[in-house]
Image (cartoon, rainbow, N blue to C red; front, side, top):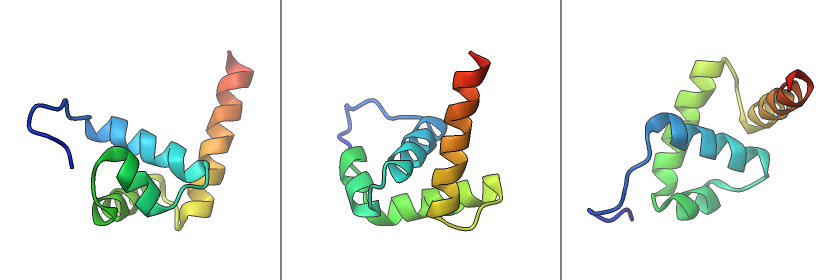
Length: 76
């Protein structure tokens, strides 16, 4: 768990990390452990992310992320 003196990440930053980890193929438990939180919190973030992006599942999320990565490379 996150300690009282630890710097907390903003929701946007956490969402970005979760999206990246899903695209890497990590499971919710692995993502939670790396963020110092619970699997339940990760699932809640994923629901919010899916709603914001109009997606249905982690496969669509991973594909969305990869498409954005390729756009950045081509636009750079």
